[in-house]
Amino acid sequence: MDFTFTEEQNLLRDSIAKFLAAEYEFEKRRKIVKSLDAQKRNWAQYAELGLLAAPLPEAYGGFGGGAIDVLVVMEEFGKALVVEPYLQNAVIAAGFLAGAKEAQAAEHLPALAAGERIFAFAYAEPNGRYNLADLQTTAKKQGAGYVLDGRKAVVLGAPLADHLIVTTRTAGARRDKQGVSLFLVPKSAKGVSTRDYMTIDGMGASEIGFDKVALGAEHLLGEADGALPLVERVVDAAIAGLCAEAVGAMRMIHSLTLEYARTRKQFGQPIGNFQVIQHRIVDMFIAVEQSVSMAYLAALKQPESAAERVRATAAAKAHIGRAGRAVGQAAVQIHGGMGVTDEMRVGHYFKRVTTIDSQFGDVDHHVRRYSDAA
Image 1 (spheres, one colour):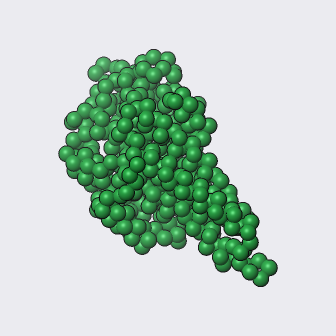
Image 2 (cartoon, helix red, strand yellow):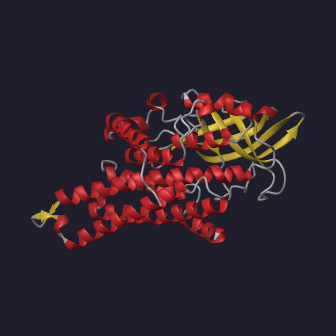
């Protein structure tokens, strides 16, 4: 299997790395995490660099890239611990809008590519676990439109967003695969309430309530009742992106730990001279390189059949979840207690890979998913 990047993809990687090295170094990131204004300025820069347009169809102002282009961006973002909701927009929102009605795609995708419109994906519910069809949020038909009621939890990117893409139940029982629909909801709509907060890894998130939110038929994305296959496909693409981000973060964890072992002295010599430390760092390196291969395979399999896509995505997410935990724990143990302090970069990377493990399903969930698909 060919893992060689194209010249354009290498140039994309270089341009992102240079921008992030200048604008997203560790101390600057501390300030960015606490400022929505700073995040909005970065968002405008991402649009100017063409990052938002990279995976979008050319017909809507994009560059026609695919999962490998997303992998390149997300891996570099993982190295810098970028907090802006790139995945929620360039992958998730773009995937839903490209699969929606022509008029909806034409209205929203160019605005997304230009950075003029920001979306958040509201899918998780307090009692839903990782089942995308387990929905208590409902959209009931009323005249020509719908009335939306329910609650969504941990909506990443929502503090920065102006539109929400919401999974709802429009028919059937709570966990039925049929009866799932998608709605595009302005965050400013009457009846929408939000509570914003920061997650442990510095990401912005919101708890969102919908209280009799009146929506016209034009707010329905795609066809009613049959959105679950599209949701599953777009979420798999998002998982592939998360795997790439985790790989970028894990590369940094290994690099920072290796540097620390070379400079931290104990008993008159660098701790990296001790064989037990060398073994741990080699184990970390092997886990990272295995994760790279799994992430690349997941990205390559996104355009394939549903069965192949699911197997590759679930395998990658399960493997990287385990590897991220092992690499992060080894790094913290080598650093000692200071490895989890706010002043040490390695602790922030460990928090991010730990959080990635729980997004869209943890290790156990994807092991079962792989077993079912196989």
